[in-house]
Length: 103
Image (tube, rainbow, N blue to C red; front, side):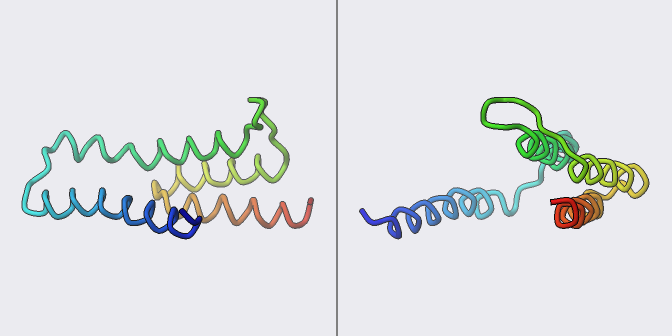
């Protein structure tokens, strides 16, 4: 099997797994508890991405000025606006700008 075929099959499989639930549950109502719990998925994923970004393969934590400034600005925006998208955009912008300037 070629690499292209493996990527294609993985993409189709992933798409099919998601499409089945969308098609099968399109006319169903979600329970209020499930909707309430889904509100915590975004912050949990964000936390997982931040921890993965800051850790080395050996498990040590490496944090510099760009990472610290990005995290602080994202936390500030999240506290003020309660908007995950704006906190992500702000944090990543600060991180990228400082990373380009500091190196």
